[in-house]
View 1 (cartoon, rainbow, N blue to C red):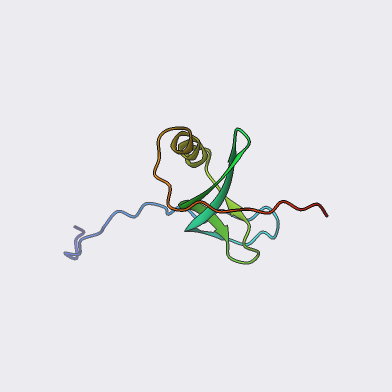
View 2 (view 1 turned 90 degrees about the horizontal axis):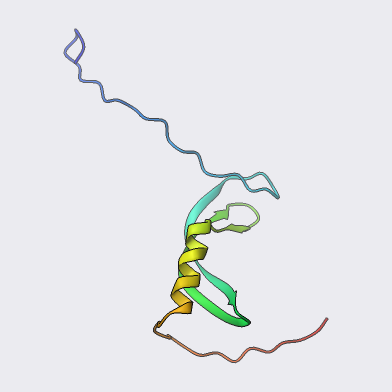
Length: 90
């Protein structure tokens, strides 16, 4: 409290959103669907936290998030759906 009787809250600096390396726009945290390859198998993982560019949509994943996905798909896990995927050559 100061001499005027007001109580001051200590403010800590906030972390700014990360910048996109392609278009230099800010990113925001979102839950996304990720295509994840591990040992020659493709997995679609839902609700993965990512930093997503507000302008171009580029997605960034923290290394710890990718490690957790590796552990998830390497071990016993529930399967929501099995999809058939076509592979084509351009």
